Length: 509
Image (tube, rainbow, N blue to C red; front, side):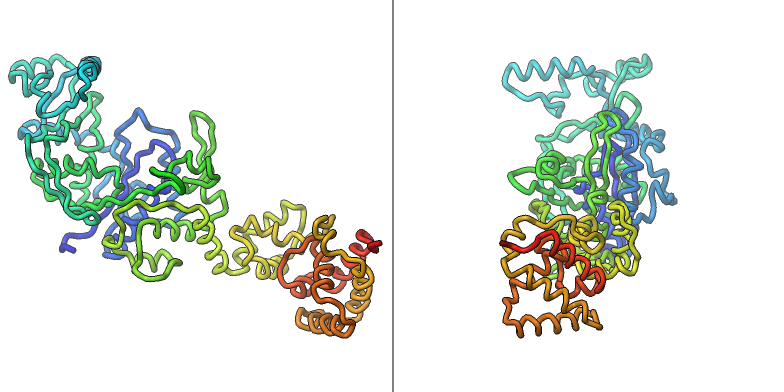
């Protein structure tokens, strides 16, 4: 690591909801900054006004708030390198575009969209691909072809133009990527990208390089999809005479099945979210699910994302954000794409659920209990959560695992009845009811001792008795340790359920 101050940024465009791939990119930037005592910046790149989506910027900020990923500078915090929104920096970009034209690294292009479309069609007719590059620019309408006076006349008359980068001919561009190593490209395969548009706004390429330089960004850690832009960006730094940051291009998040990048369609098809928060498209009204609304804990979500592409070098899988930052190293990020596994995401949430206190989970569970029409005591809810949380991945699954603690069974699972309510069950449960009515200490340990001793003395089948007993308490053959259940229900409720169950199921003929 050089002595240069570590400054990294995440620079999303507000063109829609934030994909989990974007969250992972931001997370790796955050971890890199924290590990190296640096700064993490949020910059909004809204130069493409045609793709701007209302509410997207607010969504991005809220998503990071939920994830617990904090920025040191940016649109939410301010800082000495602002403004941190490109549309608010609009006035400065034309100056840098003009500087490149003056130094001979860029030029004015006056070709209309219609003229370029015609060129493409002509090339297609000859089974070729049109590219605005070093070979073709000599035959097009630009300041490299026109004389200085002709160019000035067009500029003064208000003829629309763009500024294009003048890609050098047959030049070997050597680049180093912190993940992929040396990257070599010949400039002949590259086109003359537009840097400044006719609407007075810069393209991503110019604004990105200028902003990274002015904000003193030391490392650009971004998605693999930007790797083809790396030669242009390196050449732009050279053209300006600036020191380039170090680059790292992260591998893609891949579909759970098949080939290709993870997309919203994969989530829709397989039933999992691909966005951190729920998103409603302001144009279509279509709603896409989010990890928050699906019941994921933010720390579990972040932990899951961190390990999609990064290997900590040991067997650990569960990390706090602080532990991740301590362990993080960019050279342990893989080159190849990481396949997303929805079941592994649930596994992470389960791990975090077990780590959380019963009190914290009970506070989240209580509103769901009240929706079921039950008013419950918080201490009681905490005890219930303690018994069933191992069986759930999400708080919203706790009711399925514990509803019988709050409501006596209204019916009995017919399959369980057919299999477990035997001819002897009625008489055995009548005996058990009598036995339990005389127990003074109704703790789990004591009732278990009393009931098992009775079963042994009577020489009843343990499984037959316990299954029939569970059926009357729960309504099905599920739930935690049966004696923990009746200890929490209490003696009165246990006896009441035995009585109701005996009446409902009756004596098997």
